[in-house]
Image (cartoon, rainbow, N blue to C red):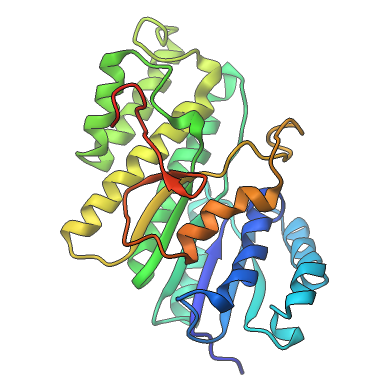
Length: 297
């Protein structure tokens, strides 16, 4: 029976950027400073069929074969599937209970990649429930299980930058990111309420169709709060959010100009790389970028 030195979880990983993150974790782990022995990656997704198929594709992946990255080829990494809908409390609890039972010493890496993209006024609640609330639930439940020196990566988007908002609302986001999770959640609830009463524009929000952007702004804000609180408690987990770039996936309907492996670069850097102790940052293209470009915050 293999004893795993490192444990990683990647959500929304049956295709696209999530699948590429799993592949590149396996490829880059052997040369990373986190390498202390065998790595087990939990590839998670809502669909068991698609998740199991994703694992099968990785087992015969040419890059992984050539690098002898997987255990079956003499490498360090094992990839296994576990069903997970991040909007389902029971799913989250099931995975958490499994982790606590099988890996009582904790995990090392959590990449919250799961998310949806929809531009429809009628699905604002659905987008926020998945992208913001689901990501927050995973973070809240699993952060206590991440060992010192571990990494937590929330995949956001440059759409989450504070650009299409009134100056007052931009400042409210900044203030929330320095205050509490409750303040961040209140902003998400405020957006929903303003959309339902058709007051989003007068209140300084972008149009309702941009719920995806608002949800990702919420992810960035909450990531900053969680990193701040972890530091106050002398936590040693590095917690960051990132934009993978405009990647050619189903989500971008084939319009992206980057490959999925290019999109995985920054998330994998934050999971495995030397980021000089940075926590609470918003990253893109391997570097911290401004969340509120107009004012440099």
